[in-house]
Image (cartoon, helix red, strand yellow):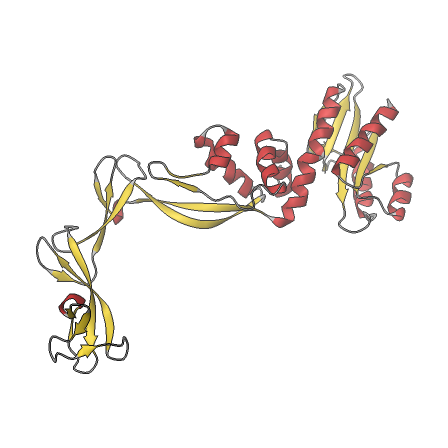
Length: 328
């Protein structure tokens, strides 16, 4: 079965590296992940390197978070690598199109509006003033007396003139020269946490992971997310499932529901009931933050679903632990 974005994210939230990284966003320590330039290595993400432990794993780590819809990325820069040695320590040379020398001099072209004479700026300079070499009139005001007509280059090696140089790359490490056609160019991104994911991410590991640890400590086998096959043959996804026993396995399923309003409506209760009606677990819990609506509570009682409430993640986790201890 192909994994949905939500399923991929749920699995990522269980990863310690993902938790450590997302905590920096959720705590406000970072608002946007920007790369840092290293002259020899190119762009790096030191924050991620400190978490995953190996710079070689950073790109794969960020790509997985993007593919799952946790992060969004924006093009920040492009970096050139040497095609010979792979170094990012590259210098860009503007070269003469005739002899390929990078010993060129760039000047501005100036046109005297009144008499129409055009030449490089150096030929107009007389001390601190601009004087037309043709009519000897002083040029005082840009775009009135004169205008800049572009750039003009002169090669100091072959003495030829041209307006547009060619670009070449020089590797400061292996001293190889390469043309644009040979360039190895890589996109560099900055990253931010998607706003619609912020709440989901917080719940995904702030609630699910502590619950999972608690259940494992008490001898249960835990899956999160969990896919259970029902009597109909359909697979149903739960935020967590816990199993106890070897011969006669008891199955407990848990779903989470969060509302930004006063209370969680009854829809998550209905959705959970539809799944447990087909799967028939031994017990079913619905964690409601900040609380469950009265209609939701009545429906949950009717459907034999235990509702656990908490104003925040911490309270919800404690309430579920208390409820499970009570059952023991």
